[in-house]
Structure formats: structure tokens, C-alpha cells
Image (tube, rainbow, N blue to C red):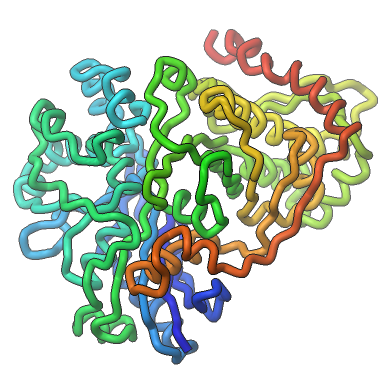
Length: 494
């Protein structure tokens, strides 16, 4: 039996999974992502501990699945990276993507180069999380480590290096460094020279699914993988998940909801226009040749539901939450919940914005509050989708939903009604892991390319359709929601 192995290096968990070429999950292993908090409120990863955890996951999967491993693919969170020295060891701990220590470097880069210039070249909006800013921080605060550095690797690239000994990057991860020219598809040598970062630290860029080489004897001994098994980079976790979900052409969209909600809208090419700049929706490549994505997110979509469950419902189970939402009846509650517990995301980015619940009265019930939180996250999703459609000038007619919260039927129906379009809900929850395995299969010659790999998957899915009358009622409430964040701006920024 041919087996594809996928690896997902995530913020909270390390995962390895074995799949058939048709996408059936045979076995999975997971370990907590080992992280250490810093006194300043940030976090770091020990790269060797990350590798050990991944190796342990792989060994566990191999003990269960004894088929022939024909390919390995690796995906990861995007902006955390490893500065590797000339001997192949980590020269400095990996700074977590959400660590705030690089804010001064971001401010200086904005003044030196210009936020608009950076967007026109990278498709990104200047934020502290990007890899180039982490390198600038290390250069300033740990100059000895910077001097020893020979390569900068994102986390998936680090695992690929540990498996194969090859230093390489891929477009979906390179595009999250702030050093990658989105249109040219290459590192920006002139920018690196301007900011004083060595160009030699940035590796050769190969497409997702390109074979990097085989598993070394040493890595085989640690992981149980067969020596020589082909390895490929699968790239950034969200684009990788989009491939597994079948997002392979323009007009298709992935909505993935965990604590945060990630929305990826596929398009035929970059849109580095003034309107795109104003939207603050980032852009990047997808692992399908010639396909790009608008990428937006709500920082506290699922997080709002968890806050509601833990703080207001006394730790109630998900079944209780669903029951309460159903008790509120069909159609809009009329309440407006702004899901900005962690600030506001695009298309109106405002880190100072905070959550709000508007429209309460003595007659408001607990069930209505529960449903209002679900409605507010759906309104926020519609705001992102509408902004993407305004930019591209075309509708996103296929919306695929995945993530743990896709198991909440009330929430899904609210989303379908608010968006006024059907949702394709994937039953499988490990889309990133599957996408990694599929792109590994491309590198191993199992498929002719990413589109063929996505088409080979036998997906279990269901469609949640909007209800016309209810959708019309939600459209009227959404028009009020659309101005809520701006109306509350003086409250939070005053």
C-alpha cells in the first residue's frame, strides 16, 4: 500500500499523518509545540525540540502504518523562522510569529522604506511578525548569533533541512518574510542591501511540491521513515489547507475557523493597487502555479465563542451552546456583536478596537446573546468576503469551510444565511496535514501537479444552503453592522 506522509508544524501542536493517495487518513500523531514564554510577553521555540517532536510524531505514525512511504510533505506556520549556522545548528531560538519584540524594527523599516512601497512589492502590510524583522532584531540584540548565521529557514524549511540536509525555501513561506517580491517571485536583493541584511541568508526558492531530495540515513533512524523517501515543501499552512479543500482556481474560497478565522480567496494574479492597499488585505501565492490569494482573518472568531463558553456560560459544553443558539429561533436576533476581542482585522484594521455587544434590553435572553456572538462573527466574515469581491470584481461562488468549528450546525447555517450563498463543509478536520501529504505526493511523482493531487482526493462534504427569506433579513441587519466598528472608534481610541 502506497502511503503519503504529511507534517504540520503549528503554533500549538506538531502533527504527522499518513494518508492514502485518495486522501484517506490512516494514522495521525501529535505533540504539543514546545514553546517558552519570555519576560516581555513573547515566546520562543527551541528548533531542536521542534525537530525532536516532529521526529517522535513520525516514528509513532510509522509504528502504526507499515505501508510503503512514497513521499513526505511539510507545512508550517509561516513567520517563525530558524537562523541556521554553518554547521547546520540553530544559531538562535526561533522567535514565535506573534512575539511583539520586533515592533521597533517594524517602525524603523516603515520610515526607511515606506509602508506603501513594501505593499506594492510584497503584497503585505507592515506588521512586526515577518521574518525580515526578526532577522533585524537578532542582528541588533544578538550580533554574535547573526554573524554565525548561514541561512534563514521558516519552520517547514527547517524540518525539510533536518530530513534531507538541503537548504531551500518555497513561495508561500518566502512571501511571509517581507523580503520576497510577489510579482517577480524572487528575493528583493535591493531591499536587503538597503536594510543591511545579508542576501546569502535567503535560500534557493523551489515550488511547493518540488522534490528536495531523499530522507537521510540519520533522519531515517530517528523517524522510522525509509531512507531515500522523497521530501517536498508544502509551505504555509493556510494555503496548503486551501489545496486540500480543493481551492484550485479563481473565484474559490477557503474559510478556516479556529481561535482565529482565516479566509483565502483565490485569484489569477496579484492586485497591488491603491484600492488593495486601502483594504489592508494581504496577498500571496498559492501552491498552484499561477494562482494567488487574498488573505484576511478575524483574530477572535472562534475565540469569541470560546470566551462566551468559558466566561459567560460557566464552561458549558458545545452541545449546550448549540442548544442555546437554537432556542433563539430563526432569523436575526437584532443584536450586534463586534468580535474584536483581539482588535479589528481587515478590511478595517484597528488594533485598538475592542469587542462590543449592542442592542441589549430587559427582554434580551441568554439564548439571544449566544446566537448574537455567532451572528457577529458571520457579519465579520461577510465584511471580508465583500471586500475581496470588490477588489477582484468577481464573486466567490465556491466557499469551502473547514476547521474545528465547522462542526457547529447553527453557526454554519448563520454563515450561509449572512453570506447568502451555499457553503461546502468538509468533514475532514486536518486539511493542512492532508495538503502537506498531497504536495509531498507531487514531489514523489504520485501526481502530475497540485491540481491533479487536489482532484484525486475523495472528500466527504456536505452543503449548507442559505434560506432566502432569512438571508434577506440578515442583509438588512448587516447594513447596520457594517458601520459599527467605525462608530465605536472614538470609544476605544479616545
